[in-house]
Length: 230
Image 1 (tube, helix red, strand yellow):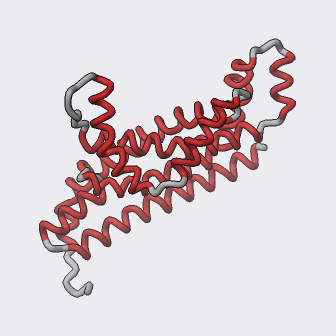
Image 2 (image 1 turned 135 degrees about the vertical axis):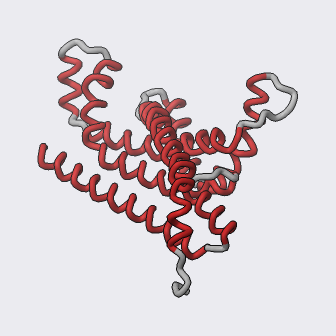
């Protein structure tokens, strides 16, 4: 199988693979991770809220998203978002939003459920005495959460958040189902165009492995440093 392995097709395609494909993958990962973390933090706070209806809604959202296959959610939002936009803008027909925006919305909403559980666990791990100390200083509940609890929680859960972001990076390869040209999609297009499936898919797998392995090693080092700091 590797007798006629053509490295040249990989070299000739590096520009397209990284300038086009990897840029889409990294942009989608960073934007979805940022949006997912912000939304996930709000959902986590809702789950911890004393307002039962709000807590139940947040719990239902998390359980719904975490129980559905990501591929199904991608398809769902790809076809649903144009109708939502049409409803919000008052348009008479579905509004095309494009593969990237659809994928970004999908990953943001999907990852928010996972980030929410990470943030919730981080908040609950903060010692109760810290909360009481903040209240003793006269801080309001939202100030205690913002200035005392969340900074400590995020420091503790940073390695887990980065690990989930790394998983998101790997999951973005599923956007091929909405014809979005990410890194894997770019490799697939070249493989089909030049008839070099082995070369391109081996290279794509190698790039994902190197990136993921390197990121995992850095996350482990960060986790060790944080544990040593405590």
